[in-house]
Amino acid sequence: MTLPVVAIVGRPNVGKSSLFNWLAGRRIAIVDPTAGVTRDRVSTLVTTENGFFDLVDTGGIGIQDVDNLTAQIEQQIQTAIEQASVILFLVDARSGRVPLDEEVARRLRTINKPIILVVNKCDIPELEPQASDFFALGHGKPLCVSAQQNRGKIPLLKRIFQLLPPADGPAPEKEVELKLAIVGRRNTGKSTFINCLAESERVIVSEVAGTTRDSIDVRFERDGKAFIAIDTAGVRRKQSIASDIEFYSLARAERSIRRADVVLHFLDAKYRISKVDKTLADYILEQHKPAIFVVNKWDLMKPMPTSKFGDYVRAIFPMLDFVPMAFITAKDGKNVQAVLNLAQNLHKQACSRVGTGDLNRVLRQALEDSPPPMAQNRRPKIFYATQVATAPPTIVLFTNGPELLSNTYQRFLIKTFRDRLPFNDIPIKLYLRAKQQADPIDIETELPDNAPETPAPRRKKSAKPLRSSARDEKPGKSELWDDV
Image (tube, rainbow, N blue to C red; front, side, top):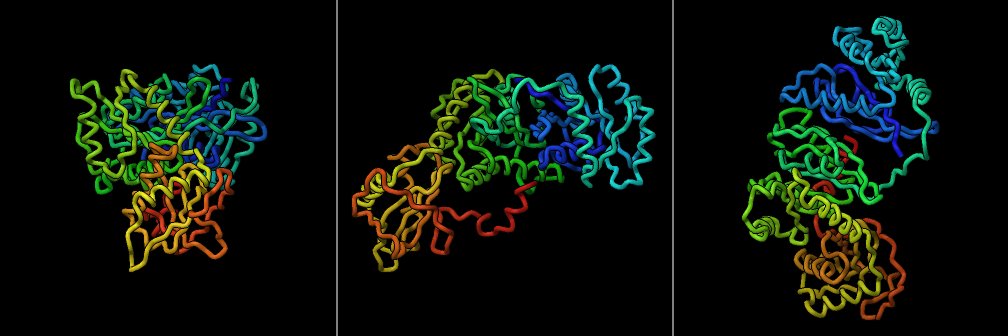
């Protein structure tokens, strides 16, 4: 079914992104006083008890982009207007009617679609009389709202649903087959890849570094399945971040990694792997996300064999030797579908669950092949293991002392699990826990295939993850990024 579209348009700095986030009920678009922050179309599904629609945020009409992307931004705005069922013409109550508002009003007069004149920033009732000045724009009675103070939301939604065409089916399911985060440094072809997946000019593509500033969810369908591709801003070294916009872009890129099912880490075949790529790979590993190294622009590297570049990547990322690699040309669509198929396979692996019996048989064989070395004059013992979660697969080992198993031996166990269980290409999260007297099971006892699963353990000082994340050590720090 086709979703009805509601597009927000207006001159720069009238609060379009604030209104977008307000109606969506969560922070999606970057809000900043700098004019011209929004470039691409940012969209989200809004569902209420009265119905649903696809809400679209656009760039400011009349802005002269500092990177000479004005024509591309205007094309994105025009596409949003053409696809919209209802248009929200947003103006600013505090600054009043300005010449650029009149220019936007003239442009919208040729549009034969319902238009709602929305006066934003009416933070207090005393500002509402000023809205009468906007009658002169010729788009009917203004509707006063305040996204910042949460005023006028219900009347605005009611007016939108009055003008929307009747829905031709039930509300679409929010659940999708797969969420893909496309990350990497600047100019690696991420936006080109997104447009190839969506089979449309969904985001702006330019040679200008830093064209994409926000994380943009692009919904598309393949073989009757719904997917979401998250286009992110190109990552830079933190020392090189020059503005608040770039700071929020980096924060959104990290958030996109955390909420994705699979991460596509884009590399440019023309350039050597940088420190930014290494930092990004470390963050993906810390989050235990299934990932694919996507080497883009491979058509420019012929006749170099893929094995040569693959060996180079493996040498740079020895801890990520399990991560699969794909060589594509996003501009021509070469191998794009293969990457999507591979991502689906990784997600299937991440959601797999192994029976306790099978898991402990693999563990027993690993202990026989290579027993853990002595530590603190004690012989480490692993009594049994159980998988307590999926996505990522999380395995708890019950031992006589978590501090006795070195990181090296833990990596050996993880590699053994990956080789002998259906987790060949994905990260595994491993926890160590001291066995309690109430835990009667011993690995020396043969476990049946249908052995009961042990519930996830509570976090204790004795629980020791393989990798200790900086975010885990400083819980206050991670909170800063959760809703940026």
